[in-house]
Amino acid sequence: MEEFGPDCRLIAVHLDERSIGRGSPDQEHERRVAAYDLIEENVFAPVGYDTGPYGLHISLQDGRLVLDIRNVNSEPVVAHVLSLTPLRRVVRDYFAICDSYYTAIRMATPSQIETIDMARRGLHNEASELLRERLAGKIALDLATARRLFTLISALYWKG
Image (spheres, one colour):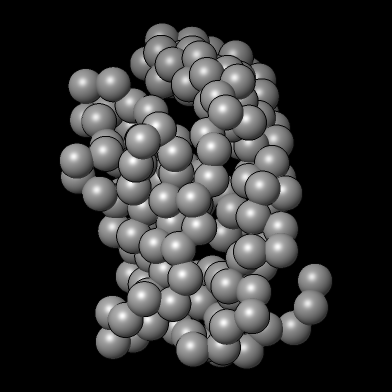
């Protein structure tokens, strides 16, 4: 991956409360951790812009994902609107494996938990790579940033 300067990063992330469903306590915890980790360490560079660092507002509008990127003064930089269709299958599979994982941590053996967690991480990586592909040419980000961003985007699918 190319070298990025210190301003090619996110310093704030906001999930639109009207777009997000309330998740289980485990999901809400995972979302909070992902948001914190994303701000602490990330590579985020909107292609063609060098006005970072950035703030990101994530929302749904008309069934599409909106990534509204702003500069440190909250002035608009660029907004990307993406179809969620390519992510639907992997999000559905990810939720199913997460449900199994959350159940397992309460009642399964350590080896069973490890097996489910490996599958969960693999699916999370697959989803993160898909997200990076969808953002190619729009936003440059590393895999760790894509993983955390996918966790936040998946929160838009949570049902209360």
